[in-house]
Length: 392
Image (cartoon, rainbow, N blue to C red):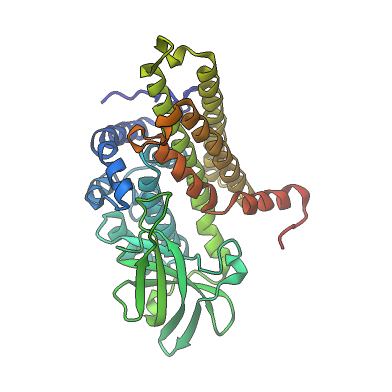
């Protein structure tokens, strides 16, 4: 297949990719357009996940891109960002699934595991043999996870006993393992544990009636005297500092996915504008519709420029928390505007799932909040630029 940047990449940032990266992106784009896009609205309406796509996503190497043990070829953080964008351009829930598997779960093991743990778990996750979930958020602890974790890990000989609960855990209804973050009863520090989901005392219940990211299978998790061997404790995790390192790796890719969600809505609106006839002509020729579309492509282009640079900074080893936080806060805010303009340009049809924009519009609300709310990311950036912490 011949590589060609998508028209929504108005300034041609995709041309920064290496040839091998372009080839994989082209093949993935074809697969998503022909095999995934035709089914996502049906799965979204039913609130179910298309598990049949997992083997093919694994074949593309999407679950192992950053890690030495599973890296299918040399690739950049910018390329990994484009993968997140391309997935979200078709469906944000599919992008979220890959982000959890590749970024949060494998990231937790990649950052927090010792060599033996990395060798044992990363290849099985990369192949899709195992599906993972990332258990950090709790019913009473979201933005204050650094200090507010209530799940407790108590040492018992060569084991740990976990008690507590988690909420909004993506993939958790069908995951084989879940990374559970808990505070040690001994030293009060956060520790991470690889917990097989068939462990006695572990249960996951699907969260029903969601109106955003409906394809993502979020669950409430209950941990009642869950016994985990010391061998399953992430050996390189000593405090929340390592948890934050995992989140730093994934936050920029969430920003990329937000841009993809914006593009998905914009492209649906642009297509509709070329087909919808009002007052005897296509609405694409109406000035007010063009104004909405131009504002949208402006948001998208500015956001791509930001996420490209923040990923380059990761490759260069100079990205800090505030850099990823600014990208997440900015792109999700612009996404909210863009999906609203796309819906507006389509009138009543903008709320009908058949035209796609309603799905992008609804999914934007969850993306705006997860991986750090705009307010929390703003405080991280605010602390960096003023030198003053304004956290409560």
